[in-house]
Length: 93
Image 1: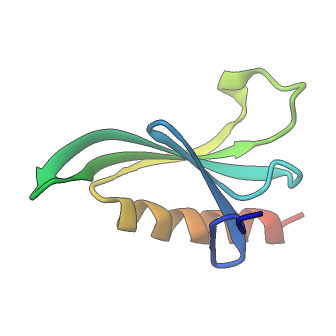
Image 2: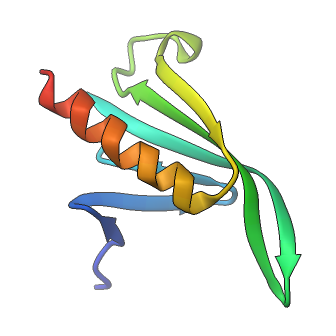
């Protein structure tokens, strides 16, 4: 079986234009949504990414799960802030 993609010790999962960073078994997860892309040669490159720190508790309404949100102009910038937010949130238990 293929090993799951990881970044700084947390799993990354992609479904269409949404990337989840972290584990749903933890209290928090990051959702990154690619809102806009541009073509660079034959590759789609993200130019607008929404980043949200969310609670994973299934009993909480979707709109109440968002703890923090931001928008970044690249996937690199988005995952950079996501890693900091997730580590801080999980450390503050």
